[in-house]
Amino acid sequence: MVPRVWSLMRFLIKGSVAGGAVYLVYDQELLGPSDKSQAVLQKAEEVVPTAVYQFSQYVCEQTGLKIPQLPAPPKFNFHIRESWNSGIITVMSALSVAPSKALEYSKEGWEYLKERTK
Image 1 (spheres, one colour):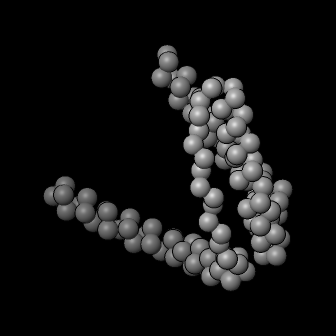
Image 2 (cartoon, helix red, strand yellow):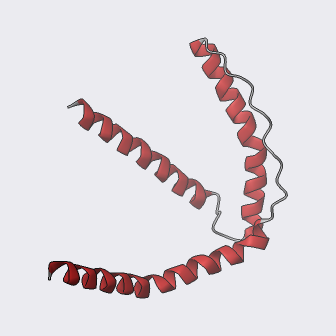
């Protein structure tokens, strides 16, 4: 009984995290123009470290644990606009090749099964 409940809880937590990620991407329009995506990334770089620090302080106060201070996150000079198109091209080319590769692999697997059953 306990393993079933635990697996259900894991499924619900993972689903909630995935749903939250999809909502965040949609809400922040991360799949829109690269200017907006870059602005959101810069905003996240400013907000996330302070939020993590505040949450760790809250956990320390509530539990009495001492969490060591994390090092500052590295600063990246990364522009989404420079890599956005190459990423989209790579994904789309992989998606366009997927049906032919699936057919090729299924034929190879079928031939392998025929040889093994002889």
